[in-house]
Image (cartoon, rainbow over the protein chains, first blue to last red):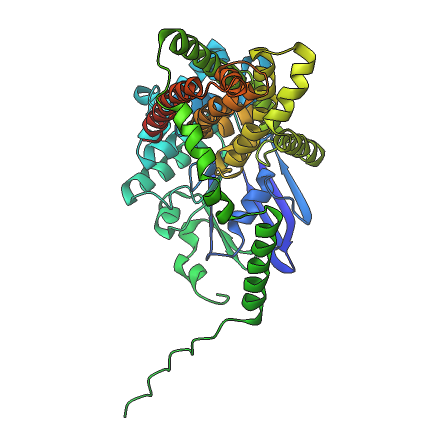
Length: 229
Length: 266
């Protein structure tokens, strides 16, 4: 469960988030839609703790995991080591100073996570040698290995080709439904949101102006129109 | 009806600031010329001294009893450079981690580490060598100690700068997952900079071998010590032999380090 209420954030006098509310329940994929600069990414970064909001309330189960547009894996390390790194928060330093010190049961858990995203066979390869879509799936496996109940995805598919993008969003939806995760994803593809999201939250200038299942919204493109819809 | 073509912007003459800067730069050079008593005429007048020197120095004494010790001393010089570089790695690494924004635990640690690095860099290795010669006596050990101190300052700074330039995304991803500063340094920051770190390490090894030569001149062992000795005994032919050996050593280290750095970069 993720609950955000009255989130506010401004940079140098420019208001980016203005009383932003968002609820993501376990088992649902919520798509955040809106034009560039409407505050979607800032909202996610505030929830993840990468930015400090000026005001408002964020409540969730445990720590969130975050998936980024730029993927942010360590390219020289193997896919498996990258997935294991998701567990750093619960490892003592003596088991986490170098990948060789990762305990055996963590490696096994990480392999299960890689298997869940369909990449167990590529576990030993450096992450940088995988395709963009595969790398993003490794990043999602890292989030699973973190055992996070809340997964935030900031434009996870904006850098991917259409088929890889479809695969990644389908995976996020599947994880939300099958593992009961609360998944909040910023998307720039209304078609993907319509196809996979359980709910769409539309943002305009730092506020949530739409919050409904995609079937109830006639035209998602209106969120990208200039000015208010 | 045609719209008038937009006129290109007029080219401006040099600004007042540019003129002032030019005058100041020229003035500083004139002062420097006087302060260093720079005088090409004196150099030309002194050609006889140079000729005498070369007459005594050439041909170099390549006999076994000069060349043998020379090569042995050159190997000591190489060893001083090697140990001085390798043993400074742990200190440079810790200070670099404290002095890079990506990994520093706080502003205080950052400023303290930067200041310490600046100090170690500011004190020339020759000065460190003179200090350590008084502590441990004449010989290569003092040279190794001097290089460890100075190289920690230079390499720590270079490594910290390398870490300042990386993309912080992978670190942020681990921070969100709950990783501590040390964990995110070990799993996101350091793995991303391994090639840069190795390249800088080899570059410093290259520089340190050349520095350890100068350290020998102040008594810290190696071939620099032999060069100093042959100058004092006016055996310039032996000195040229030592310099030729140094030339071979420096070229060998330079070429092999450049080769390895090229291989890492690709």
